[in-house]
Length: 210
Length: 210
Image (spheres, each protein chain N blue to C red):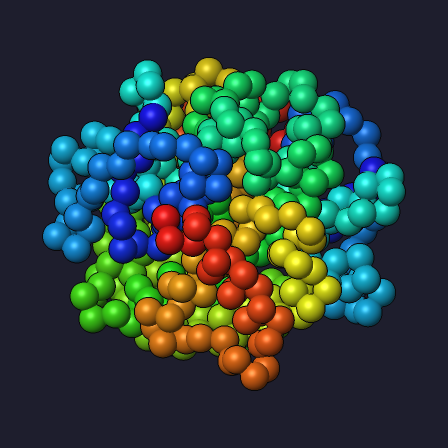
């Protein structure tokens, strides 16, 4: 198993954290996103969508998309479980992770890609060019503030996003907060004190540096 | 198991199709989205995010988010498999379904919610109000055209989205095409002939009327 990776980028970090929590060693191949290596013909043979992370299996099958990489790893290496141990847990974790993804991570992506100078015409990852929309960066920035409020409320009653156990939802939320900082959007240390407690705890886990 | 549902809406239809393909009978409770029933205090006790579908389990646990509802059903009722039979299949289906979701369904959502008259300040589903962005409706409309091209290419070599077997990815793509039609965006019968062949086949399945 190999991981096509780019150390500074948030999306592959989510899979690296997942792998680290499983105590697995995986060969990593760096793809230079800043120079556009993901859009070369060579890389498109690995992933026609021109994104990382990509997991390459022993038989050569290539799996793009974060959730799909995590699914494969969890199925092959169930312990410790990061996607749930039984049907109900799996559904509850999927529900929370979906909110971390759509209300949090995708909002951080929209802010960054619709405002960063180097991303003109690259407002969406992938093979197609789409123009930036400044109003979307503003709206997504409001979404992130609402997301911090949601997390702060949730983490007042819960050790982790889904209760007593660390899960993929914590990884998605943690990397979202790191990534939002690229756009200078951060939780408030005064208002979001539960969120700060949780963030500091996750930040102590070795996987947070993966 | 109960499903909080709204017959005309595309999101709950994806779960109804999934349930139908499993030959399950589930009690359905209609929530009137047009009158705003999803935003009442009573419904927020069931789902604080004010969305349908929601699956209510025997023990009273409520599961929102389409992918989480499907996960629970698949884990409890594995046959016929719609999320894959083994780790590799599960990952490949998750990868393709994620593309159907992000490149297709979410684009159809963005077109509709950022342009429909009744959705001023309701550009995102959920508890928070966000303003419509007309430029986003235009950009997402271009995404849908690119999505039709992608599907048409894929379905030239494959019976279903992920090869020989019907999967959740077909449900996501099929409902996306139905939903895009609300915004008068449709594949071309001349250009997208593989897509048309596949759509007509899915449209013959009893689940397509669920």
